[in-house]
Amino acid sequence: MSIFSDAIDFLASIMQHFLSFCYELTQMAGFPSYGIAIIVMTILIRVLLLPLAIKQIRSMKSMQEMQPRIQEIQKKYKGDPQRIQMEMTKMYQELGVNPLSGCLPMLIQMPFLISIFYALRSYQYDPEHISFLWLPSLGATDPFYILPVLSALSTFIMQKQTMSSNNPAGSMAAQQQKIMLVFMPLFIGYISLSFPSGLVIYWVVSNLFQMAQQFIMFREKPKGAGAK
Image (cartoon, one colour):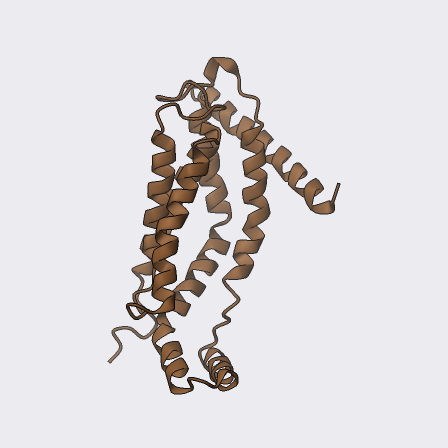
């Protein structure tokens, strides 16, 4: 086994114990529910990863705000990729922006996301409390297809929030955004059809948390906005 696989197995085991702990909290509260335990666990994990998520969103927001200048440089030095790269590097340095800074938080979060996937996929639920709301079993797929629809819809809204309005209509960047806006929600909804309901609940709640976070952060005015 590789070191990465061992690390994922270790993290998955921790996540399963964490879910059991959250379930015990619902028992102590007098309403044992794995569904509520998954929701609580998701929120706590998202809060734990909040500093990384904020850094990632701020980096993405900065890159969006810089799009007009990037397009201006590309237009001015069209046909000279070396000069374009040099001017963009100079711009990043002037503004104190690292174009790769948004990737690191995402990479750090990936092992956690993968471990949660394995943890929930193989979790052994107590048969007495395995149902939740309309779901007969959190360990089985949603027979009414409600969760797959919610996973696709929440993914669509989350992506829509992050779409840049600075890309000219008809540009390659704008076209790629439109393709991903359609493809990703459909893909997530499709794979959710075969995933255990507990795992899809995690995805939907995580998306809702991210949507609220992005809504708040994207409403923030850029530095210097309003200054006259």
